[in-house]
Length: 119
Image (cartoon, rainbow, N blue to C red; front, top):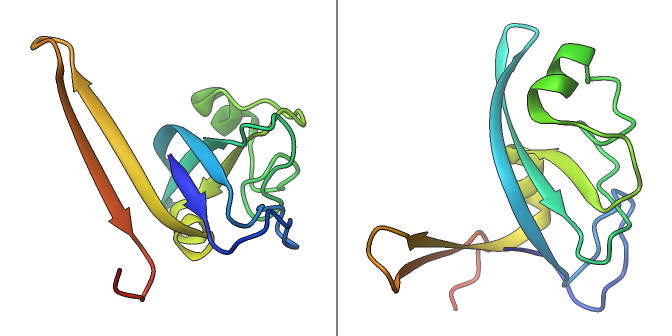
């Protein structure tokens, strides 16, 4: 889960809703113009409203090969890709839970805050 910065559920110019939780679906590392790019695939649980910056649905950075590589679809379905650096600028914290299916009921959680404030 990823939580955006701010409060009040207002949409900013880049399409991110403040104080809102997003589901992290997957992480992709790919090569674009000779450089490595790390993209996160997120989903707005409302099913609409998406990131509007680089690597968004309408971004000119996408090539047909890269779209195929990550399973890209251009729909207002709440699912979008965002570069790791943009993610770190727009989201305040991330919580990742991993369940070890080999050992039933073992569950671990990593939570990290990207804010400069001490909690």
